[in-house]
Image (cartoon, rainbow over all chains, first blue to last red; front, side, top):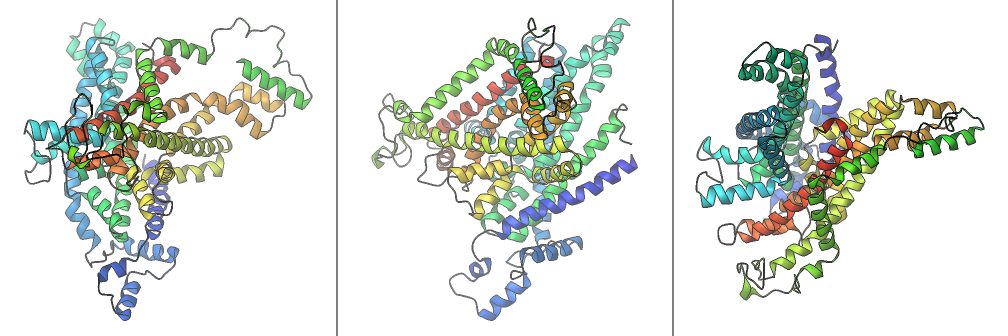
Length: 307
Length: 316
């Protein structure tokens, strides 16, 4: 196991470098001169411009710029944006919002998704099963954008149950965006659980458990669920990494100041350092949670051995 | 063995100038054979209501995209009168009017074309990239596979919408229909590649591949004639669903202001314009949202039905 983790960690290095370089190169290609934009209507003195361009390594070729950036990054320096603010400050200020949003979304996804999936799976082709199948198709089909506005309109404006914008009301502000963000994965978790439970219900050990007279509830909870939830748990784990990078739309519509919103604003304002820093962080989360999930898989399922 | 495979084997035999007997067995076991995967799948598909709902929705949507003037009830999306601004839906104007006083039904109807164009174009690029990279990677293996797989990991790790935003914002490829499709495809081809790669790896050790090789078929021919046709089923399912996903992604990018720009007519632009009027004129967000959702749903339903039909294990 140790060797497997070490090898996987080594394999993440080229992916991290590749992904951050990909973003770096694209940001490099963004049009306009950020230094000139800094001066506004009054052009900056040539000496100042030269100094600033030198500070931000803007006159170096792409590869040199990138090498310098990575060099700083390895020492924990995410650089500064063009207004002199440390990128790390922006990240530490914005990240908690995204983490809370992700936590709420994952909670919805796990609780509602698993319950719906189990109810559907234990009686295949029953009423609940068809209900879950149809509603998950519908939920998957609704674009997150549409879902956000519909929920804002219905729960926020018509019913007045939840705040629809900003984070001024603590956890309550995260309920609606969390549900919207979770919707697609929630439907997927329900389907995954359903298939997995239905498959396990036909397994020999479940028949044995029933045959020896265990109550229905015990058979489901102690025997079926423990095996059926393995793929579900691993999907949810990997989804943490995906959601942390995928909240751009949700954070924009619900006006939440998280890293998704920050990176979108930064792209529009050509704040290259902010974009590259946050995207690198998102990529890191994504890879990290995928690695955790792979290791978790072996821990949960003794049939899987990596060495 | 399907007729196609048999014909292929026969062709390979003739090229190689040998006879293995595989292509023309003395006892023709395939004559009385059971249905092929595809006719079997069609049989299941035909009886699936999900498929028909999706197919009818998709067809209607296609007709709307090709002949919008038929569905716009005679209204021109660009002839507007401010005196009608934000009027609610009525018997004459089913979807009401937008803020500029343009007939909203006509606008929503004319929005279909861009969505469909972008969806189809992007999926085409996704397919080409996915199939080529995946097939090469899976078929040749070794160093080629390692390099291509890591490259795929790199793209996979960058959040989809974010990658497309940066590509479009850089302005290198503009902001038109083609540009949006390319930006979406550039960060959307990885799953197709992984699907094709794993299918190719699974299929390439089959006996019929060994037979074709024994008869001297070249690598390229084996890949194109023998392996890919047998690896295509999961990709077809994925492609169908992905058209829907890409159409939703286009609306999202356009809504965020980095996709299509005015004066283009697009559901994303309509939702964006309507969002600030959610309190006073909710129909401005509602109608494009409903139509967008139905469109996405059509493709996802067809894909779901196709998956059930092509995967015998899924059938209860």
